[in-house]
Image 1: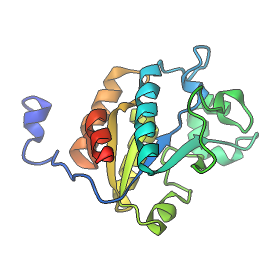
Image 2: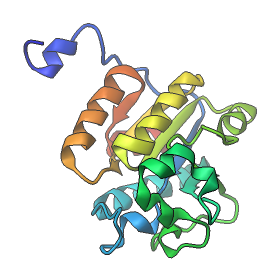
Image 3: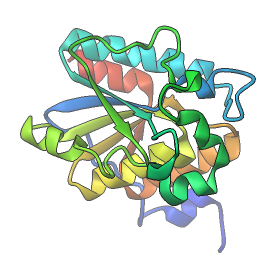
Amino acid sequence: MTGDADSNYAGVFGDRIGFGRKPALILVDFVQAYFEPTSPLFADVGETLEAALELRAAARKAGLLVIYTNVAYHPSLIDGGRFAQKIAPLANFAQGHPLGAWPDGLAPASDELVISKQYPSAFFGTSLASTLTASGHDTLLIAGLTTSGCIRATCVDACSHGFIPIVVEEAVGDRHEAPHKANLFDMHAKYGDVVPLGEVTAWIDR
């Protein structure tokens, strides 16, 4: 391995797909566990939420489909499988746990869709792909937490299901800068487009 990452990847990876014709917005796992300082999953991502709320406001104004995901397990965690075995703090996402609630300002509207999942990708074991396909959406604007986990998994699966993944740069976050930056780089190189918030909201407005 020689040279810096950008030059090493140049000419092979990193081309942009571009925006499609009909986008939907997904807000992945913006739940209290990542915002409560006493939580084992606390990630100090308040600025990420602010960016996501700005993105959601633009999406609502344009009449886009807005989708939210959370993680919700049976109290016994029997449906958490190896994921819950691997990451013990996921027990905080058992149904009814306060850390699984929406943070202030993010509560879904009555006409917006909430999808509960048990694994990293918003597509795995859910109706997301069928919903997007049936309603003619070709582009998925992705915001949420965390970049190296559920955002990456959702981006890869969006690509695999034939949707254009647009990861909104300021509206995704992680508990550490290194995996955050590395996964943004890799998603943009191989699976979708990582696009600044301003460019995305300007496109939505158009």
